[in-house]
Length: 395
Image 1: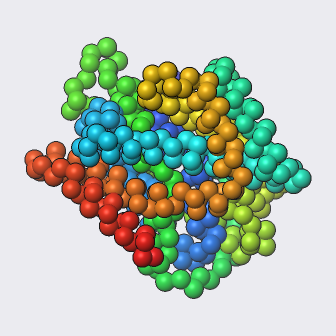
Image 2: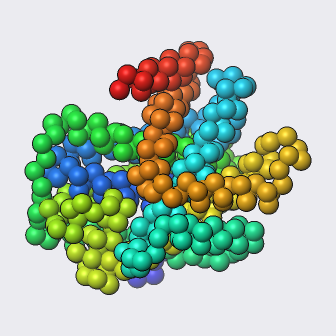
Image 3: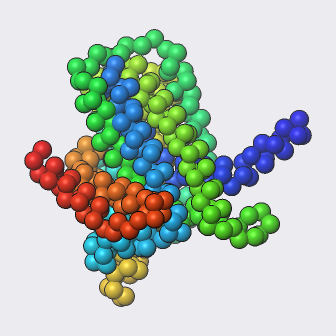
């Protein structure tokens, strides 16, 4: 017994496993639950094709991003420098805005409201946005350790709940809705849904944290870049497998219940609560709603702090204090949150459609240059951005 416990302890102390779990925690937000659930519900018996498309952009792309960022020791400025000083500054600002008040923060508020509305129908999005703004301001000003404690409790709770929903849901009676879309069309929908996770942006600006955890081994010896790369490659594969398993579970369970009366016509952001209630009963639905609210709140608080610090430090010295940056971030986030989950998706879609493929190409370019020892420069990035911009205009 003692030997078994020791083996488990060594397993979770492994830098590969620890980094894989950190990567999973970094990428697996509430939007990563909602989007595959929406695919499964909307595409019914064609959801399998969409699932593979979702894997391409929501699983493989973050792994590519981690590998590319490892070449620059997690320095996003060095990663972006290839495209030129001014364009890099603009792209970095747009990326921060997307993971801040332009998308992620208001999306967290809108998702929290949708989950809570399942329990409190009379609560309006405007009311909840104002309450959230005050709570986020108070939490980010104090930077309380309570947030860290909540995230540590929430992580296992969320994983346990989702695993139970998936496993039990697979063995329930199914009501799959036939879909009229062709396989290729469903596959493309999965690709675009994966874009909306924005996980590549999270990777670009957070890989430095992952690298800091593997800089030294257990004896205190500093690892070489080759050793760190090996750890990140293995961890990326492990983290991608974990993400892929959960995504597949979400898509399958949602597609199996796509014909359930409660799911038909339901808002995408309320699907987790509805499915949990169908599979686990009313108590399961309530627990799923509360879990979603806490998950979104902790994410919003963390991202608000990051964006406010970016504004106060990256803009010319003295322009904006941290408090002023915080107020601007929260007000803008609260306003955009009132567009709702779908409204926010539609608002940021042009930016994501054009910018995201360019960032993917930039990551692939860096990796190709290291592997094939060729100098490609910024041309692939600009050609990709130009191509996606033209596609966006003629759609």
